[in-house]
Image (cartoon, rainbow, N blue to C red; front, side, top):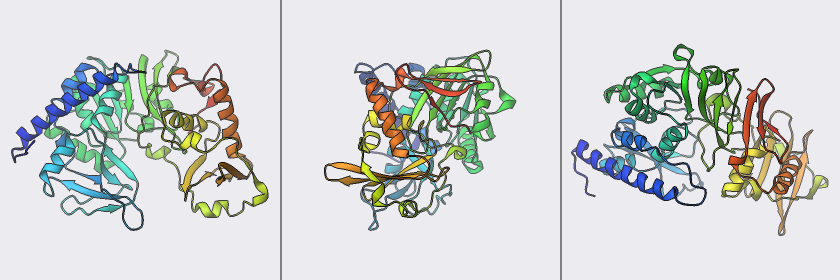
Length: 410
């Protein structure tokens, strides 16, 4: 379409088109294999009313090619730089990166970024709608959102439930101020607080639903204690191998909780307290390994690194057997680095196969291979066949055909 400079009209037309596309894509997904998780119609109505552009005055989009050093280039986008591109992207089903490496951008004079780690974004609308729908939120519920971010997801909750039923916390003070300005400017007045989502927000407890827009290595106990008996907590889970899953827990009267992993390949940025720590130079870690330590690998690294749903799921499960290990690939060679035990493993192409070298007290790849063997013997079960149980005995991922896996503490 041709954009004019009438922001309200342009945004309204693009927003209507976005919602129409989201509804059509969701209807198509609901008829295919593995269907079942679809948007509640009320969330589509909310998306048709919330002006997403108001929450993303500036963001980055990836350039078509990396720089000469091979680093990805991120181009700044604002209404002043390119009105049409800014507004069209605001109403695309795309995640819009708004911050790198915890550093704020001067959106009056932004410059391109070369490399860096995204630390804040406006999540793609289809995922936001899916998260709210999967959490089984209905009118009358009080909700706590972990990770306000730009405030767009918060606005959707306010639009459907009413601002008085919504609490949202954000650890980054600058992010929170920007979200607050946008929310209040649009007429939404939820309870907002600068707080670490690891601890929820006691002043507004108890909640019927808690939904996190960032991932955790394990379930924060405070969130369960702030949920009404029978209430639900929807959390993305991740780890230092960058394996991800989502769980929908129902909280019991005794404070325990249980629920299934949800299907799909969805990832969120880690809560800052649970982000992977720096590990140094991979070359330093593998320097002590010698060829005498080499053996043939029983499983290729692609079992957990391939761009497939099974590999994505298996990488999440593998974190249960090597919870403190990082996975980094340099020049096609995967390295596992355990920052707690000092263990390391490296896999090297060897003809049509792979060889592995391991050092330190833990045989990292051997542990993963043993689990892959058990996973295969169990018929390669999907995420929805696993249950997470949280009680006085810890946090255990359960499956009838596999050894139980424990999520890391803290």
